[in-house]
Image (cartoon, rainbow, N blue to C red; front, side, top):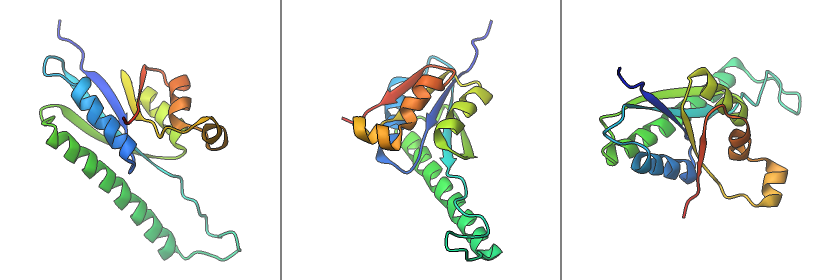
Length: 157
């Protein structure tokens, strides 16, 4: 019986912490002996605007389209950087898939883990202390509690 391909999802954004987590994953979880699929997940924030801003001004469709274009360019830039890390660490023989979603990161990450049936989730940690986590919330803390698979949170040294 052939072994099932293991799916490892790495949440990536423009932060150094997420790229370090990706590097750690490639160095420690990916081996030549097991069939693995690397899912690179980037979550774009939801559109912060509708047709009105806080002062009541109407945004033109061109402004909204430009903001969406910028958001997509940023997502592609993050994915290009992640794929470059994979190439630099000679992880070219593994199957990679780009996954770009939109919404609140903590909820989207957990739902995407379940939707794509990921076996493991790898994330970076920004190293927030108690007060920052209390005020800002922590995506990695939320995912560690709610994701339907094992979660590895990688801290930078």
